[in-house]
Length: 310
Image (cartoon, rainbow, N blue to C red; front, side, top):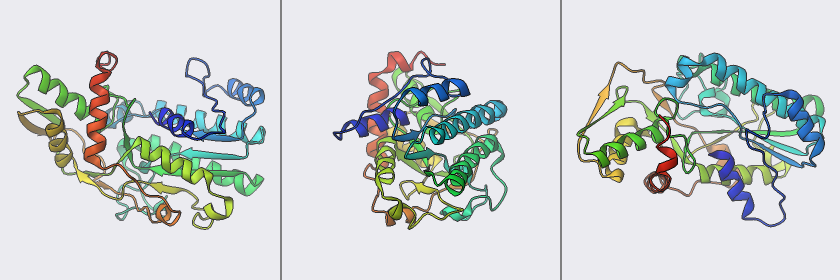
């Protein structure tokens, strides 16, 4: 999802030769393959969006996989980029890096100030390691490796699998299925009280390009040597109850919404402080309602592909 959005954004500007590889063509968990790729290609900038991602269920059931694969991917790419002399790299992390009880909205300085949310701790630890790798390569080698921490992303090419997806695409699929099959009830995991911030993936791609194009002096005017990442978000959040009602309206579902409190809620609230980002001259453009409607239209258009997942 994020990679395709970045490609769309970069294709809008002339003068770029965009180099990509599919999972089938390049396994980023294999060090030899990654080093051979960078040795063969002449790469000036790297957007490191590749990762193993998933919702609460997937994170709880496969923490070792999430930790191992993400550590492998980012370690291989960051080191190979350094070895190949890449001029600039942008590492994409996640807002789950912040402590479970971090003060809201969460500023970059909250990193490592308290215990993480247990349901996605392994993934968060991997992403924290990625930030620290970028900082360490800058301190030791002078590498211009930057990091951005997005809020919950959604949009075209999202994962709509009910077992592994995040909350927004999962709800889109549930409500669409109920609306088109005459279902009377949609059950949402958890109490519905947690609040989440959502950002359309095209806005994320726009922010990434903006941050990557900043001069070192501009970027490091707000980034700190030991807290160098930049939060990327919409600056607003909604409860899961509000999100479910909005998706219900967009999909045309007329039945009842229930909440299964036996399922975990995760962190009570996750809202990013985007003061650093605004100071760098960027802010989001897509409203949540507009973005969900666009994503729903994409999902319906690609239902034959989406519907193949469980």
